[in-house]
Amino acid sequence: MKSEKSGIMLDHILEEPVLVEKMIEDKERISHEFVELFKKHNIKRIYLSGTGSPYNVCLALKYAAVKILGVEASCSLPSLFVYHEGFNVNGCYKPDEQLLICPAESGRTKGSVNDARHAHDLGVLTACTTLYPDGILGKICDVTIQKPSGLEVALPSTKGHVMGLFIFLLCFIEAAHATNRIDDKKYDEYVGGLKELPQSIYSAYNSSIKWFSDHQDVVMRSSTYRFVGYGTNYATAREGSLKFTESHERPTMFYELEDFMHGPLHAVKNGDVIFFIAAEDGPEKERMFKLVDFARGNFTENCVLIQSNRDEYTTPLSLCFDAVNMDPISAIEYVVPIQVLSYEIADHLGFDLTQWGPISVGKTMGTSYEDG
Image 1 (cartoon, rainbow, N blue to C red):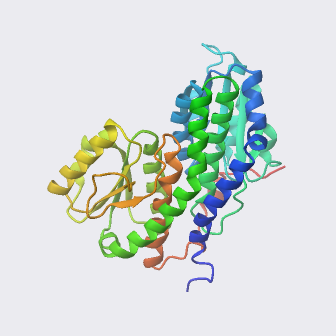
Image 2: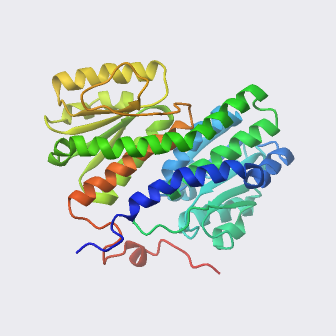
């Protein structure tokens, strides 16, 4: 039997635009320490590390760091980073020219904590988001920003994911402007895009609820799902796969646009549902539209374009909303339809996302530290 709070994941998603509005109003305070870090140090290299949804935040932030801050950036899973990659302290960069960013949730996951400890020992700068700034990760890092999202009752992270991404995008924009890495015009464009996000999120939410109501038979008949994205929203495709798998346990795969054509497309069967994330305009978006036409004619008609309602090209299954469509801000708004659909599919399959399974891999494998 489902609990009285079984639908709370939708409430969590609806909190996202409210949180974004509050963060914009308080952007100077939130970003102050991060900006001061960039003023004091000539940061040239950024490492991003996380597991699960935080990894997908890292992947989106990697492209944002390159685009907004003009630095070299990489994204790694903590275990790969600790055991196989590491910091470039003996190469091109001094320790204080490098920055490790961990967009964490609890801040207790061993991988991120180990990365931050290693960075601290080498003199590499560190920054994180966490629900618990006085916890183990928060105490290690040079800059610690508390996430205002709070604990989520439903298993899949929604508002936590959005907050982790939004906070560091805000910090990147403020730091880039303060250090003259972007000019006033570009700064105003980015801030304007951030201010449009709340309305975009509401639009994405409402459009997704209606879309699922109209097309739930198509979606529910499929046993397998795929997400295809490009650019910053390759990270959104990854997050889509994670959210779907966490929520309803049906096999869900993710691909970058060009990579999808080189083999994976040929595994698609008629009736499979493919979600194409057609975000910012440009040659990749035009390629996406062309690929959708090809896939619909040769593999499956169930090609869902998640797109702006300003696009001229649509399909019978297009999910359209009032998108800002500004890279890399689009990674926030385009994840919302995926969050809503994750819940809707799970709910129609009878899953209660507030009731976690009795088996915990974390206890068996010791994935987290205790705060102390």
